[in-house]
Image (cartoon, rainbow, N blue to C red; front, side):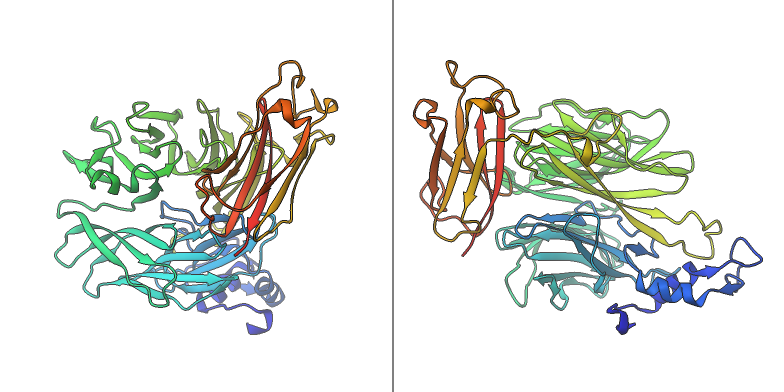
Amino acid sequence: MDNFSYKLDYYDIYDILIDAANPVGQTVPNYNYGWGRLDCKAAVDSVITFRMKSSSSQAMAYNNQHKLVYDAVNSRFHFVYQSGQDFEGRGKYIRYTNSADGENWSVDQKLGDGDAPSIVVDAEGNLHCVYRDGNAIMYQRMINETPDSPRTLFIDQFALDIGVPAFVIFGNTGYVAFEFYNQWMNSCLLVGSFDITSSNPVLQYNNLESTAEYRFGAPGLCINPSYGLVVTYARKINGVFEVYYRASGQNWRLVLVSRNDGVKSVAPVVVSANGLWFFWEDGEPSDIYYRWRTNQWQNPPMPVYVSAGANSCQPRVAVNSFEPNKLYVVWSEQNDAAYNIYASAYYGGWQSPTIISSSAVWSVNPDLVYVLEGLIEGRMLITYSESNERWLNRHRYLPLYRVCTYQSVLPLVPGGPQDKGTMQISSETPYFEVHPNPFQNYCMIEFQISNDDVGQGFLKEPMFPSEPEISLAIYDVTGRVVKSFNLEASILNYGSSIVWDGKDNAGCRLSPGVYFVQIKAGADQRIKKVVLCK
């Protein structure tokens, strides 16, 4: 298959041939020989177009971390998923692809053997992937979209099982959390760290908790300025799973998140946004619940959306990097035999969900990412896997799963998404530029606000006599203000230029990477991306 620049293994070829078979004389494959006739040309064509497909129903499961990320340095989406699994679970491996627009994706690459991948992009735009391979946790780094050889972070030859890993990065340190099920049938929750710049990274880990009574399952992981490293997971109370968290900033003290009401709570996710936000599946059939904590809990466990008899599962969350009080959540909703993808947004309260997919097949294991757009709230890209509806007989042959993508501009409209063409933006916007961009030492931030702009989307009220507050600030990719400028409307005379030297409010040189320049006038704002080079 090298002629097509693909690296396909036996299980890829199996998938392609089965998917391309021509069902002559029968409508489903028989138990022993598959379809009656094979269309060879269709099989060859399938090799050429073998993208965003998986032979595994766990293509995007069961990791509670992200498989889809956005690289703001290079303005690209990056995506990893699992394929190649046979009936006995053998042959699993990790596929990788990327896209500039979220619609046209590159030729898939094979990263390494294993399953349950999680991907993170660092401040310089390099990719890092952690996944499971049998009794090992593997790590792979990608520089300029070229993968290094896989490195083993953890291995135990006598382990009965290694759980799905959660993975985050802060600075040059990678953090991993996973369940280790040892030969004595004890479930141990391990949390460790390693140097992502090392050519031979070594995982330094601790056992946070262990039990012989149940399995912990897949944890969630995040970094928060106040709480440090935060890990959330499900553990049992009186035989029922409840959601807890531990944080390094609280000396790893155990804290209950869910209600402790005898109702099953599992599959937790945690994100950092003006504190900690937790999401999980609650009940049987389950709804998606959430809870927000700053220095204390801001609400009791509450549902994002209550479905009538449906099963809501697999929540994933993204945060608006400039307005972290806005969050976006997607999940899979089971109605009868079908699963569909739902999405909702938090604007001080949860909006009625939007149905992203609606078909008679399984749409499962969604993921999403938020992308900043200068003139609107932003947009989000959602990925999920969808089974092939042609496959009716599934107990002998594997269905071929498609990996689907969906984009929507924001704000998310309750009950239905907005297409890109429906968002109206005034073309008569004020002058706002940053140059040179990228820059090394200095950049010039220039802007002009005229009376003509009043009421046309930038200023909703006259600058005089009320003189709305005008502010200029620099944000990093996490949404943190690193540099602010004091501007007086009375001395701006509707326009000005500011020189930024790449330093923060303390006068310290900032790390190379992507930053965002935001100018606000009253309730309106404009945002520009700028890249600080070494």
